Length: 425
Image (cartoon, one colour):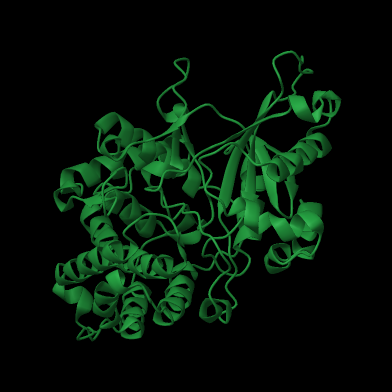
């Protein structure tokens, strides 16, 4: 683990993006292309080298012409969005790096026999460009490594500054409508309970919300949009005083009584894999993936984010490529059902002598973070509107999430706001 961390720290992400080696100078160009065609020669050559170097065995014996690689296409509606071009100067000035995950399946040819416990297929994850901050790529890999060692995530076969090799798991992501199905909701709650009890050598002080509020507010406030068609909506967003809203939310979060746990912070359908293994329970068929936002945080935030995602459908093929259905937000009964399943799993693991109960107070805390969550993803989408080349209505989404944020604030209990002055925007 120490070797992995040190090797990653030796090559900062910005250095990777600016490498002057022959392949390094071409890396951004090749990975920035639309991935609808076959994988290009240089990408295949680099992937071939990584697989040989980190997997060994049969992978060392195959020739380049027999090496198989397939692009795992990311739909335009997936919010793990692909970006092209370098980060804009105003965002770069904030010391914000770029990262996205370009995903490939690498395989041995059928004619080659694999050795015992050797993978025939692996998933290659290459870091490219998406909005993140600081050591996010490093932290994501450290968390992935720790969870892999504890069998909570796919097996890790290799890690290098440009990306990593992971176990390839035949699966599909959940669909939005599945989140509300009682059996699936129960299984997700139980899965989240296990995740929340993980003990990792990370900062236990719940600074994540405040840190993200500050960083994303800074970044969003510096965004400029030149596209004529988007300018009107962008001007609408610019009427929002992001800093006042962030300061208000920071005070709102400071009063929370929600327990601190190891939170996923992005538990939505696209980050939950379904294995469809009939020999396993539904719970064991689910795998939580993508830990770029994972941190010690308030459990109510994780619940709030997940419940908000019940209303978000990113599978639309027509502009703006998403649909928000507010009436799909879980009812009180559905939220309590989720929390009871969560408590039951904690009790089975020995973390509770009885159910936590007091659902009114817990739902109240979730309600607090529903508002916070809407505002954070609104900021995120403003930033993506500047950086992303993917076809998605980022500004529309930013405005919709901001409106949902305002509605959520209006619906908060009066006593929750009596000491906090609300922004006028």
